[in-house]
Length: 306
Ligand code: IPD
View 1 (cartoon, rainbow, N blue to C red):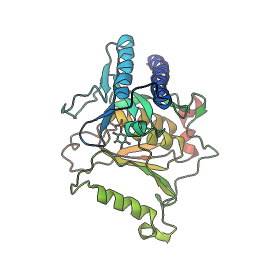
View 2 (spheres, protein in one colour):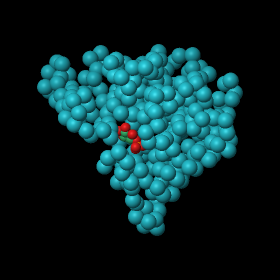
View 3 (tube, rainbow, N blue to C red):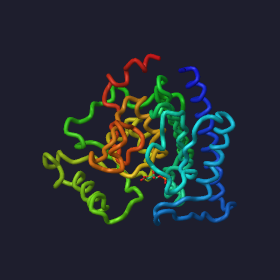
View 4 (cartoon, rainbow, N blue to C red):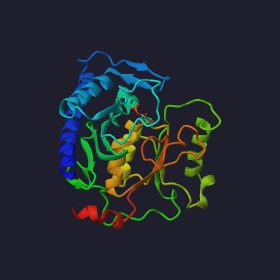
């Protein structure tokens, strides 16, 4: 019921703040030198890394959820067993989908774009999302039926006067955000050179569909897919694209983006054997394309008045 969802939402917001505070404590210890030097382990390759902080924050979140909601399923980036089947990690059961530290590479470099991401998924759809970026003191949250919020007081999208419509010739004149991902293999269907080439073409005159006017305003790579989604919900990014996401990277962000009136779709090739069996889904995809809230009609829907 909405009542139950509201209670879970309040718990998730509180948990997100506490987990972010824990993250911040670690950052401060690193800055003032009272913590041991930061080490990280490499997982699949040199850019797929995990730190002790990822693990500690996940344990903190997992324990709190188990205590409060022992029957709910838990899916966390660090708890997920390597090699475990990827298909249907999320099913109809109420499931918490957690990335304790999204933007781990940023965190190890002390680049402040990292966050805690807490998603709650019911019937395969992200119903609650809490994203907390403690260094910026930005807490994004949403619960279905309750709108999307920044720091619990400003409704998303932030630009509401009204938010300008998407340019008809998008991605022209858009801020396009994308990530490099972790798969750097030189494979025909997804190699980095092709990715880079298509990004450069969008930004440069050669890619413009109408000469100079056809260029994107800018391309951004924050290093956190979760924050990309939060900033798309905010209306700051027009379009976000990424290939190679996991459920915990996007669950919270999808809940927030949808409540803000944005759109998201999977962008898997229809003949991809790994994703072909996933029905019209929001979670379980590899490639995503998200569009910011488009105009006043989307934000002044029924949800707005609640
Ligand atoms: C990663 C970041 C990165 C994105 C990867 C994610 P992590 O998450 O969001 O920007 O490109 O797809 O897995 O490892 O920092 O939690």
